[in-house]
Image (cartoon, rainbow, N blue to C red; front, side):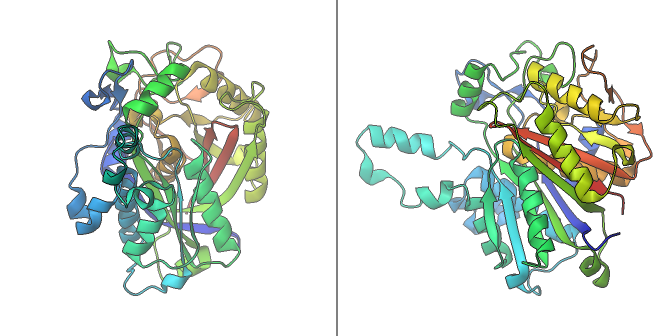
Length: 407
């Protein structure tokens, strides 16, 4: 442990694979895909999504649930679980020293689209006066602060599909700068709406495997054809390692390194030579004082789009040359949760390290021959590892890497 080590003392997940961390981990390890035809997507060209299993939002959040949009519901549920898991009691903590940082990629359209329809119909006076606070990007961290009595720095960050990882890195920096003693950090997204679905379909980013919905999300497979939209949230409780030890908290992993870079190349496509991804990894390794030989596993961004998987695969192969590295993409099970993905996958990487088991990449039947990686498929793999990485990439060329060490 170093003085810069940050302890992960609590985790919370709500994903298409489960409504808490334990159930999500079991489903991910089973390699059970969650993609399905989504009737709520109506007549869009590709009505596939990965939805969180049904849950009682009012029972989990309270009577104020009515004023929140779905991505805020998901963020709150994951935050509550993470705080419980950390053994913290918000009734007794010093809220002025608690920070909240949540990554969100795209604000939800569930409320905005009907409001636009009213506006176009001239029904200006029927618009909800709460539309703005319910749909602004910072709604999730704001509601978490209200619910848990957190009064330190709070913010929403957005780097498209790398937002959740950016939030974790930002929260870690707040702790290292002594701007807080506890940080709740992660990502939340609820994009399963006809508008983003149709737009991503127009971009050619979605899998069109309508004849085989469960097989639609297939990262690194030679027959992959795009990702499946998904909803979810992941939150970590982070504390300085010395503080966590002093209060006798269980440390689930050490958040030891963080690196970010920007391609500065294209508004949607990753840089073809993958050097942006390499820079983010190199920065994270330097930050952690680790080398590539120390990393035993990477939870890859692995969207299942032909271009992303090939570029990310080539970058990882160059970085980890001559080193046995077990790679997986959990998006084969969860789908792509966009701004939440980096946080969800960092939590899953922490569980991978804790269990010393790498989950399989669902639907990986035949590895793309252009991807020279040891990608875990079919069944979970017991794997000895002391450090792992979670890689995230976002539209606009954002690359973020979170490095975790074994507690």
